[in-house]
Image (cartoon, rainbow, N blue to C red):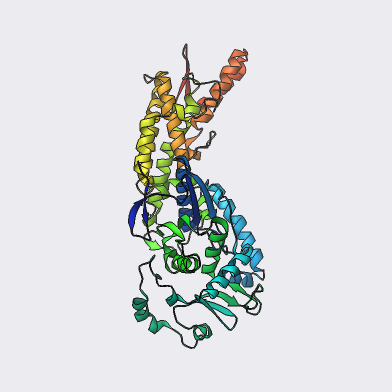
Amino acid sequence: MTLTLYNTLTRRQEPFETVEPGKVKMYYCGVTVYDYCHLGHARACIVWDVVRRYLQFIGYEVRYIQNFTDIDDKILNRARVENSSMEAVADRFIKAYFEDMARLGIKEADEYPRATHTMNGIQRLIHELENKGFAYPAEGDVYYSVRQFAEYGKLSGRKLEDMQAGKSDRVNVDDPEYQKKKDPFDFALWKAARPGEPAWESPWGAGRPGWHIECSAMVRDRLGDTIDIHAGGADLIFPHHENEIAQSEAVTGKPLARYWLHNGMVKVDGEKMSKSLGNFITIRELLDRGVDPMAVRLFVLTAQYSTPIDFTDEAIAAATNGWHTIREGLLFGYQYGKKLGWGVGNGEWGVGTASLLPETIERFQEVVNNDFNFPGGLTVLFELAKELRREGNIIVHEGKTETSPDELKRQWQTLVTLAGVLGLEAEIEAENDKNDGLSDAEIEAKIQQRQEARKAKNFAESDRIRDELQAEGITLIDSRDGTRWHRN
């Protein structure tokens, strides 16, 4: 079962082979911190979070870096509107980013470099490009000479001559920046300081870096000349990732990344998400409506990562129902493990590889190894969860099950393990929707309290708990085998 990935650079699916055996160096182009994260950010962060988890699951040691772009015109514009500073705006939305991602269950990266903290590396890279003839200064700015890099366009498949034909009508020859360039395709590596904007001293005068050079420098500083996976949204293929390749490879003479992976975009009701259309949805807005974060993860994972995905009310409702199914399976052990003789308390049975179902693990890996086919992996989870739900119903209504407790334990632990690979985790005391009343776990906890009261001959407390459950529509059935229950 070899992991194969679709590589944007080669336009084909290839076996995954790392620079250093057993280790993965992975970089994800993160967010520009001028606003709250939206659904597009949610999809990207969930996808690359699960990619990282899966690589670790199959045995790789992963070093995962995600940057923050904290120098940008959008950040500066927001600072002006708010009568604030670029640093204050960036800090506020970086804090908001971590809040939102924590709610979605995103594991933190190993490091979060910021452009403002990488200024030495940025200037060093620009200086090397200038020395090698790939960059030139112009009145305080520094530009990359695109035509000097013979392989420009290899990632996006674009050719300069084709772009030239369509660009002439859009060029503003009176633009001061255009007049500084030797060629219309050249792009800024360093921008001269403007009044009222933050600036850093450099060999070319005070100024700030261009967007593309920031990521090239951060990749090199944190991960070296060549990394294994460079990830990001499909909207970054051109010009951002194309320019990263041109900058980095012109200096090092080595591939910047072995595999370029890109997640598809998010639409809302079939249209591109934008504030002008009024369909711009932030992560916190969605979660504050009461949508379960795990349902959001499930929604994202139901589509192949590289394809577009359409956010609709129907889609999130389907994902919510799907999550309820998986959650029931994940809670199975906490609800019925004691009855099945697994142990004496919640979570004390542990989850170890020795007790997993090897055939199921193998089937999961076989499908996911096909270009991170997480939708196929979810199919395996649903099969396990539905079987455990069926077994749970048998236990509730018949007090026992024909399947051996050891087999049920292996099924449950396999589900918990594979769900964890996808970042799907159920809180033990998960709250049901208001209309659903008490959760199964809450009912089991009250039954345990009642049993303890009966052992202590505190029959008044025992009756009180029984009546409380009856008021919630829960009927208890006492027998020699223990207490069963069902919803009325």
